[in-house]
Image (tube, rainbow, N blue to C red; front, side, top):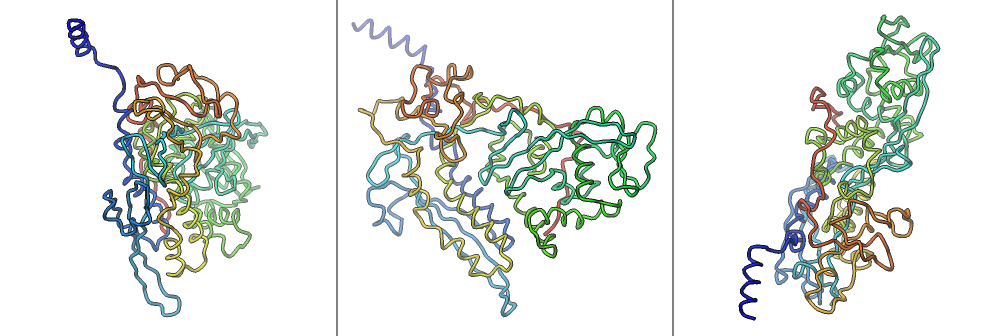
Length: 492
């Protein structure tokens, strides 16, 4: 027996287990809670009066000032600090105040568990899309950021040139804030008509004119009867499937009548503002608020998680829009079930209640006509320390620890779910998402399924190869390096 034991020990030393220990044991290392908290807090800076000044995390529970309220929970405490400046409407003086909020968040115990109100729960990973996802048979392309999702919709339309010939094209609309708006309206109202052409690399292929005569290599379109025309290079029109048709649609609908109007940002901001408010006098101000809201969609955390997108294609939300527009067809053909298009997360969904709360408060302030110090302070006074833990306990992502011993690896370490915030709804999910996919082989256990929620709760194999919390980090679909990196946006 001793010889057999010795032989087995030597064999084991030369042939170690192929379990992915980094994935199994590094729940508290793969994600940085402080970085995620900073990303959430920085989104408040879209309100000009607020500046995020720092985040501190305390893991020593003996230092909590309200330790007596913790009872049988194991928690950490995060402190977010802000600086507020606001002009008093009565005195005209600048008021300044520093404010902070404290959050009690679950502490990871023994790599796998939380202990909340005396009960142990599994720390389950949530699997979500790492980037875009497609619906409506490829006619809609979505992106979920930490703050909010948006959709890019394709609508097939026809445009008629000056010779009466019909050209098929696409109208690309951004579906956000409960409105579907021609995507080019956001670009032109932010950075102007000429810079929009430059940003997409079409400045040599498209031009405006007050005359109908086209060059020999051009095709003309009437934008406003006998007043404004668009001339497009023939070879570009043959290759393009959205830009010209969306541009023609925008100009006709806006009733732009001159090159001067087309070059005037106020004209386009008035058009954008009128979509969101019936008040003509407040249209331009409303447009500015919409621009602020659009910019804040893309948060720091989402940028870091879009590892498959080249750095130059995610410098701003408008770079992301351009990337999605250029590669719309390729992205629309991607399989939403493929694990290469997925990633895992843990702390993000724990902090989702804070994200949702601050997002609601931000839009409330952006839509307030006169901001006061009292209004700004109410953002923070309404946030209770147990905001995240209270909602986490009632979340469908949490599971009671029911393993019979501490060696139960598959229950405690390998469970993942596709349900939860910004994930799939287990009450209304397509049948195919409850099935199996070829990309699951070697990564997801195929022999067992959740009885109560099949296909939504999965068990990873201990042999699964991941790069951090990503199944695939390879960069795909890079835009041409000839396109400009910079885009000059409005200053508010």
